[in-house]
Image 1: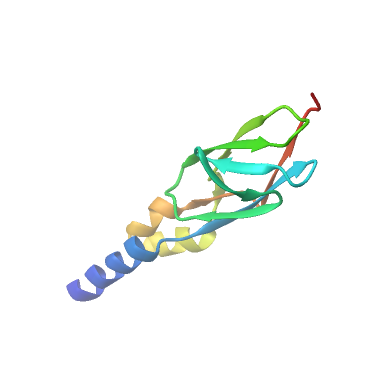
Image 2: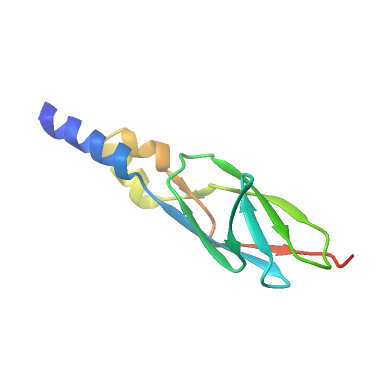
Length: 109
């Protein structure tokens, strides 16, 4: 039994519960930075394995528009992680996931 718990803990720590959100902008095609790292253009499916309550800083840049800054956070309850957490405490760190999408409006210069 101890071996099962140890292997389960290692599994959850290595693979975690990934959460994905769609980051959209108006206009589309804005360059997207998350926590200061350029990762692509909008619309963009962002996925990570951050723990509950994680907050990411988002910056959108497009020529002719003011930079748009915002936050995305894991705030939606993940029922599978909750159920898993009842049997093994480790999944509780991934009990929250991102909402399905974030929309950012950009202002013209």
